[in-house]
Each structure stands twice: as C-alpha cells, then as structure tokens.
Amino acid sequence: MGVQNAPTFYQSLAAGGMAGTAVDLLFFPIDTVKTRLQSSQGFIKAGGFRGVYKGVGSVVVGSAPGAAIFFCTYDTLKHTLPIPTHYAPFTHMIAASVGEVAACLIRVPTEVIKTRMQTSTYGNLGKSSFAAAKLVLEKEGLRGFYRGFGSTIMREIPFTSLQFPII
Image 1 (spheres, one colour):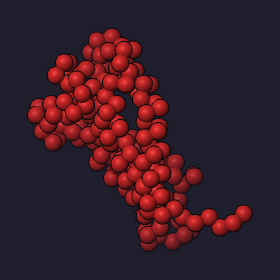
Image 2 (cartoon, helix red, strand yellow):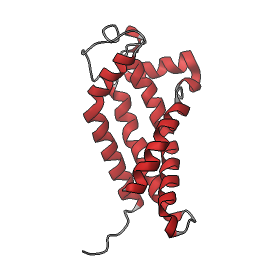
Image 3 (cartoon, one colour):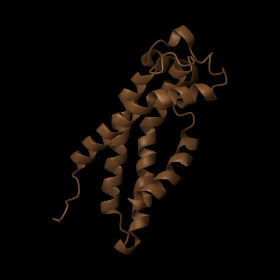
Image 4 (cartoon, one colour):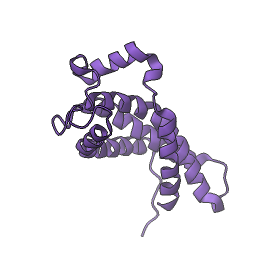
C-alpha cells in the first residue's frame, strides 16, 4: 500500500458538501415524520405522511455549506493544532468539536426553517422555505434563526468527540 496524502482544503470542501447533502436528502422523509411526531400540534395536524419533502429547500441551501465548513474546519485543525502526536485522539476531539460549532452556525438556521415547514407552523403564509425564513425574521428577529443552537451543540459535540477519534 502506498502513502495516502491528506485531502486538500478544496477536496474536503467538496467531499463534505456532497456527502452532507446526499445524507440530508436521503433521510429527509424520515426526519419529517419524526419532527411531526414530536410536534405539539400532533402528527396529523402537522401534516401526517403528506408532503414529506416539505421544507427540503432550506436543507438544500444549507446542507452543503454546513458540511463543507465542518470538514474544512476539522481537517485544518487536526493538522495545525499544537498537540503532540501521542495525544492524537484529543486533537480529533477538539477539531471535530470546533468543526461542529462552525457548521451549526449554518445548520441551525436551516433546521429552524425546515421544522417550521415540516410542521406547517405558518400555515398558508409559509408555503416555501424562503417565505418561512422571512416569517422567522419578521416574528423573532435574527435570534429566531438560532433557537436551539445551544442544545444542538450539546447533542453534536459528544457524538463527534467519540466518532472522529475512532475513525
């Protein structure tokens, strides 16, 4: 076996973006059903099994940039953090955690819009992801796009802190 070179910044950017988008699109209907089951409106009022791709526009817009930012941050930090090589798992944990925070700056706003669409929160006023985004801004301001940011970080960091040192 030959020596494998580390991916370049642009390779990480492209691979992360494509992988993130593929996974998000593949599992979107399952996520919609889960979100509607958890909705305070109840499953049927939130849409039931109809329109399981409702809100996919926000995911398409945010998935590739979010995943790309994660992988670029992760790859850059794992090569530049001044941690001795015998502590490599800690390097991966820190790089993945910072990568998650960076990715969530994009991921959380798209998740907010997506869940508002999936549960028909705005009814006929939120017929598109763009319309829902305008309503979030109008009703809640910029802070509305980051609702759940802290809890998302608390969920993602332990996962990636375990996943990436194992890889």
